[in-house]
Image 1 (spheres, rainbow, N blue to C red):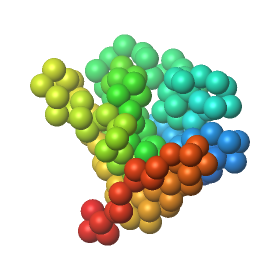
Image 2: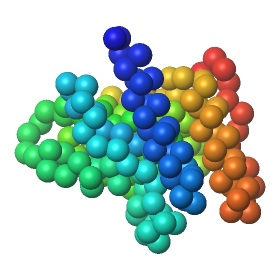
Image 3: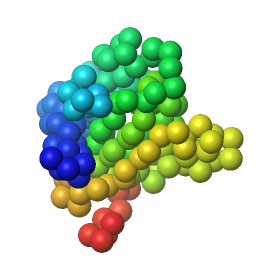
Length: 169
């Protein structure tokens, strides 16, 4: 299986976690951490509204569930985090502080996404360049997640702030 096929497989698992989050009445975002051996270390999903915790984002949930392996000393970053939406600034900081070396997301978030912003910010650029990221590698996943986020916004009485996706992206 090549890297693109692996990314699709694990991103699908993150999408399934997002479905569970949506079914439980919270923001439809899911995440998965995978080791360099291809084994799923842990799965997580957004729990902000189910746990009444503003920090219970999918990425924080999966990092917490992974525990010790992600905070061991060492420069090696053998883990990949797959998530359905670009991590916010809080989650991006937590990802940086873990041993994640690669982040893949289904849908970029120009409103609250922080990973791309931190990776080019002069103060954080050097640190974030230790990690690779892949934004929106699959149009169908991006569009599916966009539709979920639009449903969530409508449910919460918000205006749709999710722009159309260019199929060439």
